[in-house]
Image (cartoon, rainbow, N blue to C red):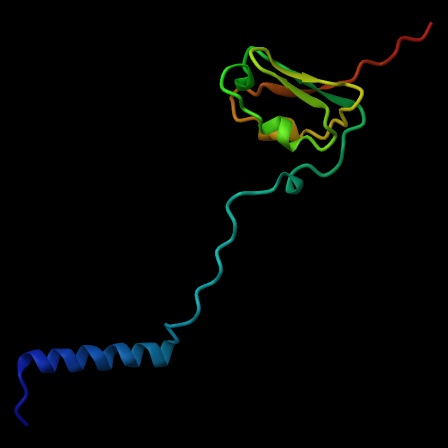
Length: 122
């Protein structure tokens, strides 16, 4: 049998690849990738009855560039964006869920959760 070096290597590599794929099952379907962006529902489980969100507008991007992250994610619609000023949070509507604090892109956060003031009894 007379075979060229090129044909020898070509056939040997082909048969080696074929053996690897049949023996080990190397051509299996790849696992679907897990999503890298997590939904805030994974982290925020329930509203905190005794908490409310407080804005720190000196850090807020909404006053300069129009960041709407907290405004868009607030399910209670307690956040209002005021261009040039920042955000306003309606304490009566705020459920204290913490989603706004979680999605805030700045460090330190421009929104934080604080305890609600208890009415003073006489």
